[in-house]
Length: 457
Image 1: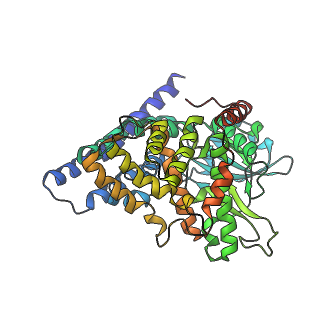
Image 2: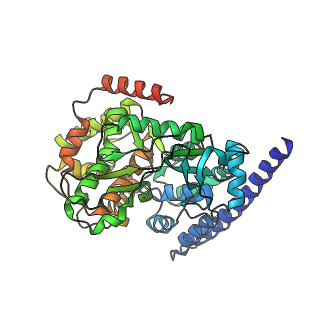
Image 3: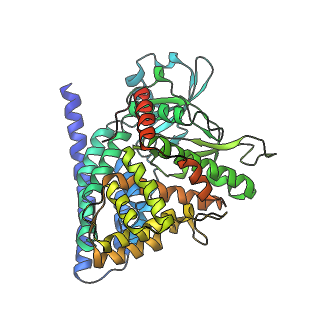
């Protein structure tokens, strides 16, 4: 036990040193450039190289930062979005040792077959194909070793990165953002919690024919191994050449998969990565209007559960923007946790709100943002907000807002990739339905209790 603790301490210390050195060198370079009044864009690329070389959780944090609008200058966001979660996979020998640690020496006897070559590798773990003894095809998500130490080492340095932004662009107070990112990344390490998230989504979407949720095999799962039923599907981007009708049906499925859990249960799938969606159906292009077509919703590590009052705030803001009711919009922001808003600050927040809610207010068939490329979605509006906050800010962003905003941007990017045309207004009206705060509280409490998840705070 002492040797294990020493090894974990050594790994954490090495990680601290490596992260601190990489970030520190780049930070000094940025500071020197800014003090000298020079900026050629190379510091953003340098930061991306420093973080990308670390792999693991810091790269996941960097990708999160890049998808939160106006958290970073545009050139930083552009560079960090290029990072790919392509950590080198564990070899067969390493996988064998890890599987023994999770399921015991005779772990292979619990499968009809197990493929030691990973089907996918990401920042915190990798996925292996397997077949259960009952013949079901499985996806076994196995966490890399010592990820808890790596996460703590990386998060300890996270504020260094944020402090660079605060020093040179102090228009957003990022203290709550740091806490929120840290909480979500730590949760992603807990595969037992992710299993409960998957069970929760399985209940919420059980009657949705266009969304499939993998079921959990608890007897083959632990806190660092999650075994799910395998879902066949094609990458979302392969649908771009499909007919508009097929792309529209898949986009509508994405809308249902995101807004129904939020509007009725206060839950969102907070990781907008395109790899977390797969298309099921006839190669993504159904032969007829009645053929099955929809999405597989994958990876439940980053799930955010909201207070029902926050959901009510979303509905309130939607109605305020629909009726151009400024005071009602301010009440919605305060419901979300924004504090000390002046009229000027609320008007700045409305710039962003009108962008996010714009498609939901427009009762017609349209794209999510006409004439905008997926990688630039929200950038123009974020710049306007940033410029306005230079004069009116700073503003403290509440924790619950962070992943709501991030997921909405990611979802919008997916719609743009599909070039889908939908009546988002009618879809939203259908999702929000006859909203009742008390009904939401009751539904959420019951679903969370059945899934074994705590109530939001």
